[in-house]
Length: 397
Image 1 (cartoon, rainbow, N blue to C red):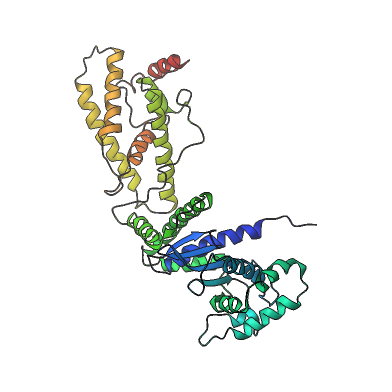
Image 2: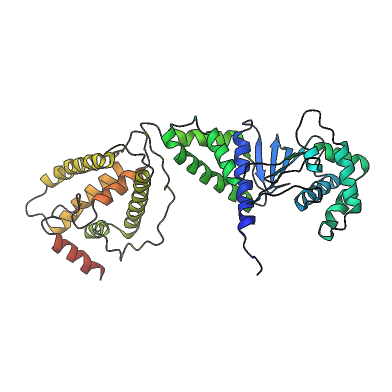
């Protein structure tokens, strides 16, 4: 039965992206990297391609023989670049990175990066294969290589380095993690790696979608590592949901208690949607912090107590100024004042460096949710919860 699985090609693309990240972390900060430009990976310096890399990934052991398709298809690409003048050799290095292994005495084994390497024998073997092979699937590759002059062939071969037996996609991940080991304490390394790789895949997607991809410089990646690492200090926590959105927002029909509370004090639909976003982002963020064990002891519980205490102090001061006979309209106005304070003025952080407002705002909405909310906006909410929510329900029907 034919195998139509795209698993191998998918792994190949992910290997390419991950290998590019490792190259950046392993190289100088001024070097720039772009994927799927002149080659799988192009390394640039001052706008000039310094190295082209072809990456090949195999899930099972493979051999890089003299007639290997991945060897000759790579040679076809590079021969075409050379004959077309899109690369200048030897100024641009050419590297074939593969998890396959080159047998002893093979062409690829002769092109490894080794002291005293002599490309002459490899060139002669390549010429023999290109002339004698009857492999129809590689005809175009042989033709591209044979179309070069003898001097161009020699220059091409001298520029090539074969890096065989490369670690596979999991092995490259291990190398990346090793590069990051000094950036944060041991318990935060997984979280740092996950966030860095997620950011990097976003950059890769940007490059692939752009007709004129912008190279990523090493210093940009190093800056990102430092930025993420700083969030794992004693005064910070990572922010991951700044742009996150739930699948849908229905401010008019949502029946959760924190939403109903806002409708009960006549908060506008647009602001309720903002509150729903804050709730979603804070809930997801706090859940992730807990899963990754980034919180210390009962840190969230203590933070919520602080929020409740500050809310009580502010709301009680306003309620004291209310007349015992204050109208429902006046009660709702005071409720909006308390809500406005929370949304626009309060700055209560779970840790000093966690400045993103959705954490606090969403945490307040978490406290205002459920069957027994711990904060509320309408001054008489607890006393008249059924009446208030009934009136809210009636106003939206």
